[in-house]
Image (cartoon, rainbow over all chains, first blue to last red; front, side, top):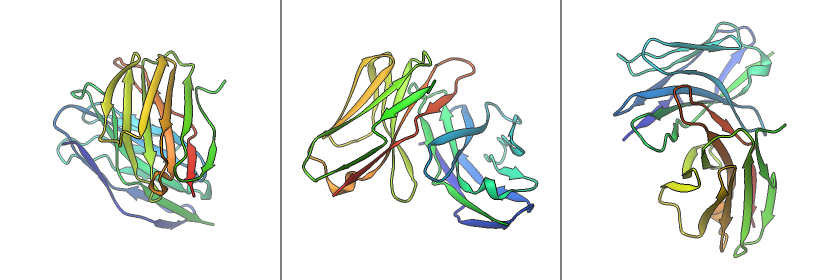
Length: 114
Length: 113
Protein backbone atom coordinates (compact mmCIF):
# COMPACT_ATOMS: atom_id res chain seq x y z
CA UNK A 1 0.00 0.00 0.00
CA UNK A 2 0.91 3.67 -0.11
CA UNK A 3 3.03 5.14 2.65
CA UNK A 4 5.18 8.11 3.61
CA UNK A 5 8.35 8.01 5.69
CA UNK A 6 9.85 11.09 7.30
CA UNK A 7 13.00 11.63 9.26
CA UNK A 8 12.45 11.51 12.98
CA UNK A 9 12.70 14.66 14.99
CA UNK A 10 13.12 16.80 16.77
CA UNK A 11 15.36 18.82 14.52
CA UNK A 12 17.01 21.64 16.43
CA UNK A 13 18.69 24.46 14.51
CA UNK A 14 20.01 27.92 15.17
CA UNK A 15 18.37 30.84 13.42
CA UNK A 16 19.58 31.33 9.82
CA UNK A 17 20.74 27.70 9.54
CA UNK A 18 19.91 25.56 6.50
CA UNK A 19 17.04 23.13 6.89
CA UNK A 20 16.45 19.77 5.28
CA UNK A 21 13.67 17.41 6.33
CA UNK A 22 13.77 14.13 4.45
CA UNK A 23 10.65 12.49 3.06
CA UNK A 24 10.34 9.37 0.96
CA UNK A 25 7.20 7.69 -0.30
CA UNK A 26 5.81 4.45 -1.64
CA UNK A 27 2.91 4.62 -4.05
CA UNK A 28 1.31 2.28 -6.54
CA UNK A 29 -0.27 4.97 -8.71
CA UNK A 30 0.45 8.60 -9.54
CA UNK A 31 0.74 10.48 -6.28
CA UNK A 32 0.61 14.17 -5.61
CA UNK A 33 2.93 15.21 -2.79
CA UNK A 34 2.39 17.77 -0.07
CA UNK A 35 4.06 19.41 2.88
CA UNK A 36 1.84 20.61 5.70
CA UNK A 37 2.88 22.63 8.74
CA UNK A 38 1.28 22.60 12.18
CA UNK A 39 2.18 25.45 14.51
CA UNK A 40 1.74 24.85 18.25
CA UNK A 41 -1.91 24.56 19.19
CA UNK A 42 -3.12 25.08 15.64
CA UNK A 43 -4.46 23.09 12.72
CA UNK A 44 -2.77 21.97 9.53
CA UNK A 45 -1.76 24.47 6.89
CA UNK A 46 -0.67 23.59 3.40
CA UNK A 47 2.92 24.70 2.92
CA UNK A 48 3.55 23.53 -0.63
CA UNK A 49 2.69 20.79 -3.08
CA UNK A 50 3.82 19.13 -6.31
CA UNK A 51 1.65 17.07 -8.60
CA UNK A 52 4.10 15.39 -10.97
CA UNK A 53 7.69 14.31 -11.29
CA UNK A 54 10.30 17.10 -11.31
CA UNK A 55 7.77 19.70 -10.15
CA UNK A 56 9.10 22.03 -7.48
CA UNK A 57 6.76 23.37 -4.86
CA UNK A 58 7.73 26.53 -3.02
CA UNK A 59 6.26 28.88 -0.43
CA UNK A 60 7.59 31.21 2.28
CA UNK A 61 11.19 30.31 1.43
CA UNK A 62 10.55 26.57 1.66
CA UNK A 63 11.08 24.32 -1.35
CA UNK A 64 10.63 20.67 -2.23
CA UNK A 65 11.18 18.85 -5.53
CA UNK A 66 9.22 15.77 -6.57
CA UNK A 67 11.88 13.17 -7.39
CA UNK A 68 10.33 10.08 -8.92
CA UNK A 69 13.65 8.27 -9.38
CA UNK A 70 14.39 8.41 -5.67
CA UNK A 71 10.72 8.54 -4.55
CA UNK A 72 11.55 11.56 -2.44
CA UNK A 73 10.13 14.99 -1.62
CA UNK A 74 12.62 16.56 0.78
CA UNK A 75 11.77 19.92 2.34
CA UNK A 76 14.46 22.62 2.36
CA UNK A 77 14.86 26.17 3.51
CA UNK A 78 18.00 28.23 3.17
CA UNK A 79 17.68 30.25 6.37
CA UNK A 80 15.25 29.29 9.11
CA UNK A 81 13.66 31.68 11.57
CA UNK A 82 12.41 31.16 15.11
CA UNK A 83 8.88 31.52 13.73
CA UNK A 84 9.42 28.37 11.61
CA UNK A 85 9.33 26.25 14.77
CA UNK A 86 6.49 23.80 14.16
CA UNK A 87 5.72 20.21 13.18
CA UNK A 88 6.10 19.47 9.47
CA UNK A 89 4.17 16.67 7.76
CA UNK A 90 4.90 15.13 4.40
CA UNK A 91 1.85 13.60 2.73
CA UNK A 92 0.70 12.01 -0.47
CA UNK A 93 -2.55 11.60 -2.30
CA UNK A 94 -2.84 8.96 -4.98
CA UNK A 95 -5.12 9.78 -7.91
CA UNK A 96 -5.53 6.05 -8.43
CA UNK A 97 -7.31 5.91 -5.08
CA UNK A 98 -10.95 6.92 -5.56
CA UNK A 99 -11.08 8.42 -2.09
CA UNK A 100 -8.26 10.93 -2.78
CA UNK A 101 -7.35 10.55 0.87
CA UNK A 102 -4.15 12.09 2.23
CA UNK A 103 -1.63 9.70 3.74
CA UNK A 104 0.69 11.41 6.19
CA UNK A 105 4.17 10.76 7.43
CA UNK A 106 4.76 10.73 11.16
CA UNK A 107 5.71 14.41 11.32
CA UNK A 108 9.02 16.09 12.12
CA UNK A 109 9.24 18.66 14.87
CA UNK A 110 11.49 21.62 14.09
CA UNK A 111 12.80 23.84 16.86
CA UNK A 112 14.69 26.96 15.87
CA UNK A 113 16.71 28.69 18.58
CA UNK A 114 17.53 32.42 18.46
CA UNK B 1 -15.09 33.76 6.77
CA UNK B 2 -13.79 30.48 8.15
CA UNK B 3 -13.49 27.92 5.37
CA UNK B 4 -13.72 24.72 7.42
CA UNK B 5 -15.10 25.18 10.90
CA UNK B 6 -15.29 22.60 13.65
CA UNK B 7 -17.16 22.78 16.91
CA UNK B 8 -16.36 22.49 19.68
CA UNK B 9 -12.68 23.34 19.78
CA UNK B 10 -12.22 21.58 23.12
CA UNK B 11 -14.27 18.77 24.59
CA UNK B 12 -13.69 17.17 27.99
CA UNK B 13 -15.97 14.32 28.92
CA UNK B 14 -16.19 11.20 31.05
CA UNK B 15 -15.74 7.64 29.92
CA UNK B 16 -18.94 6.07 28.69
CA UNK B 17 -20.51 9.30 27.50
CA UNK B 18 -21.74 9.98 23.97
CA UNK B 19 -20.54 13.13 22.18
CA UNK B 20 -20.66 14.77 18.76
CA UNK B 21 -18.26 16.97 16.84
CA UNK B 22 -19.58 19.11 14.02
CA UNK B 23 -17.86 20.20 10.84
CA UNK B 24 -19.01 22.63 8.19
CA UNK B 25 -17.30 23.94 5.07
CA UNK B 26 -18.35 26.90 2.95
CA UNK B 27 -15.97 26.24 0.06
CA UNK B 28 -18.35 24.32 -2.15
CA UNK B 29 -16.15 21.22 -1.84
CA UNK B 30 -17.66 17.82 -2.60
CA UNK B 31 -15.49 15.59 -0.41
CA UNK B 32 -15.00 15.71 3.35
CA UNK B 33 -12.81 13.77 5.76
CA UNK B 34 -12.23 13.06 9.40
CA UNK B 35 -8.67 12.51 10.63
CA UNK B 36 -7.46 11.54 14.08
CA UNK B 37 -4.20 12.88 15.47
CA UNK B 38 -2.86 10.95 18.42
CA UNK B 39 -0.60 12.13 21.23
CA UNK B 40 2.48 11.47 19.11
CA UNK B 41 1.09 13.74 16.37
CA UNK B 42 0.44 10.85 14.00
CA UNK B 43 -2.44 11.61 11.60
CA UNK B 44 -4.69 8.83 10.39
CA UNK B 45 -7.70 8.93 8.09
CA UNK B 46 -10.95 7.79 9.68
CA UNK B 47 -13.73 8.53 7.20
CA UNK B 48 -14.29 10.09 3.83
CA UNK B 49 -17.54 11.25 2.28
CA UNK B 50 -18.12 12.31 -1.31
CA UNK B 51 -21.40 14.07 -2.07
CA UNK B 52 -22.88 12.75 1.19
CA UNK B 53 -21.88 9.14 0.45
CA UNK B 54 -19.42 7.19 2.57
CA UNK B 55 -16.26 6.37 0.63
CA UNK B 56 -13.84 5.25 3.35
CA UNK B 57 -14.23 3.70 6.74
CA UNK B 58 -10.70 2.90 7.84
CA UNK B 59 -11.36 0.14 10.36
CA UNK B 60 -12.71 2.60 12.87
CA UNK B 61 -14.69 1.07 15.78
CA UNK B 62 -18.41 1.21 15.15
CA UNK B 63 -18.75 3.44 18.23
CA UNK B 64 -17.77 6.16 15.74
CA UNK B 65 -20.56 7.11 13.36
CA UNK B 66 -20.15 9.87 10.81
CA UNK B 67 -23.18 11.63 9.40
CA UNK B 68 -23.33 13.88 6.36
CA UNK B 69 -26.71 15.63 6.08
CA UNK B 70 -25.49 17.56 3.03
CA UNK B 71 -22.29 18.21 1.09
CA UNK B 72 -21.28 21.05 3.39
CA UNK B 73 -21.49 19.15 6.67
CA UNK B 74 -19.81 16.08 8.12
CA UNK B 75 -20.46 15.37 11.77
CA UNK B 76 -18.83 12.75 13.96
CA UNK B 77 -20.76 11.04 16.73
CA UNK B 78 -18.92 8.89 19.25
CA UNK B 79 -20.72 6.47 21.58
CA UNK B 80 -19.43 5.02 24.83
CA UNK B 81 -16.27 7.10 24.88
CA UNK B 82 -13.07 5.40 26.00
CA UNK B 83 -9.80 6.82 27.33
CA UNK B 84 -8.08 5.85 24.07
CA UNK B 85 -10.38 8.13 22.11
CA UNK B 86 -8.55 11.13 23.54
CA UNK B 87 -6.98 12.86 20.55
CA UNK B 88 -7.30 15.82 18.25
CA UNK B 89 -9.85 15.27 15.50
CA UNK B 90 -9.49 17.20 12.25
CA UNK B 91 -12.09 17.73 9.62
CA UNK B 92 -10.96 18.46 6.06
CA UNK B 93 -12.59 19.12 2.72
CA UNK B 94 -11.53 18.92 -0.89
CA UNK B 95 -12.93 19.61 -4.35
CA UNK B 96 -12.08 16.89 -6.85
CA UNK B 97 -10.50 18.08 -10.05
CA UNK B 98 -7.20 18.70 -11.78
CA UNK B 99 -5.95 21.23 -9.25
CA UNK B 100 -7.37 19.64 -6.13
CA UNK B 101 -6.27 20.66 -2.68
CA UNK B 102 -7.33 20.09 0.91
CA UNK B 103 -8.47 22.53 3.54
CA UNK B 104 -8.34 21.55 7.20
CA UNK B 105 -10.33 22.75 10.15
CA UNK B 106 -8.54 23.91 13.27
CA UNK B 107 -9.24 20.67 15.12
CA UNK B 108 -11.22 19.47 18.13
CA UNK B 109 -9.21 18.36 21.14
CA UNK B 110 -11.15 15.57 22.83
CA UNK B 111 -10.11 14.53 26.33
CA UNK B 112 -11.80 11.54 27.91
CA UNK B 113 -11.35 11.29 31.69
